Image 1 (tube, chains in turn blue, cyan):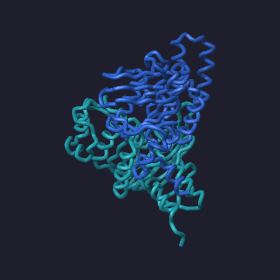
Image 2 (cartoon, helix red, strand yellow):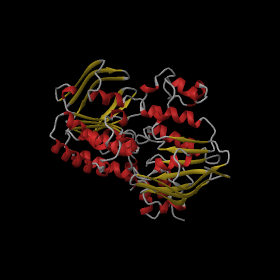
Image 3 (cartoon, rainbow over the protein chains, first blue to last red):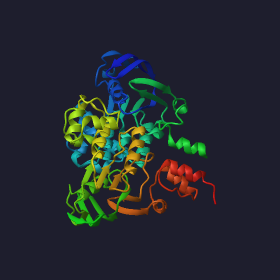
Image 4 (tube, each protein chain N blue to C red):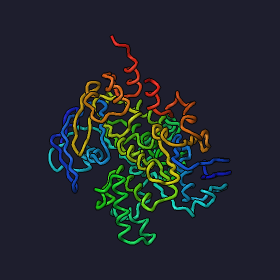
Length: 225
Length: 238
């Protein structure tokens, strides 16, 4: 369980929040604090006050894969292969094993054809997929994804969702502006003005939002049928 | 780049980079044109070819004579020139208060632009860009990172340009779409025209789920929005 207590950090004010294992979607308007919350869970920044723990340990002691909403800000190397290999190389993995895992994760994320390309030549969507492969390659305990689906087409988004489901990563926490993606998560957290206004199963969180744009379109059509 | 009267003409445009190659031929008249296509299909490359940021290797790109044209990049940070929200608005030659009164959700003027989320940055960028008068507007993924309220607002704003500008919208967006005049697709670097709306909807190879739902029931919506589709599905046959 990821446990957040008495968290106060910039716009965020969260007295208590528990995130169980599984797929968690964080939704809310721009500026609500979604990226800030994700950066705190990823251990990239420390809370000004309050506490965050992952299975009773400090996030900074966990293996965490993180994809920034500006993925190019986290890029270290110029070639796609080297970028994806970097978490393993920093852990001094054997070369042959690193090579095998990079090719494996690239195939799973559908970017095997990009391995020799320069990062600077990638499209926005391709850049996100490279960042995701890099986040997954070391087998993280927690995967934190900040709007990775903002720059992917529907087919790629579906493939991503399937990959995340089958990845075996215990905690996958992602922000999204696609309510149909959020509807497929195990739990949804709604953030507004830095506060959690709802959290729980998608059916419960979206139940009172049928008249707003924060409602999955696929559910509207399912209801129509 | 050549000039033409009131339309954009792509005539046998080709561009290659490594194993990727692009081919585009088409005419874009006044109104909203939606161009969809998968990741890596060449949408961003085509947008840059049209505004002259990339030179075609073959063929010609022709823009309307004396057109005031602009390109909005997929990533808003590529447009930023000011340190703060206020400086960024002024860098466009706009009055800060006027822009903020148009959009109350723009962050405080003294906020550092680097502290904005990508969604906030996109909103600021689009507010500044759309506050100017343009004849040609090329938008690369304008809806990416925006929340659903802002996407809806942007759709209405773009629809208001239908009569006055040529607007090309390159996007993956599936749900929050404006009413458009023409549909196009990019696939494997090749641009193809599905046709004018509504007729072109039935030729759309990879439409959003709600359109696919309507077409599977032999229902043709008047346009591509979710509301148009729901309305069409509920329409009582004559």
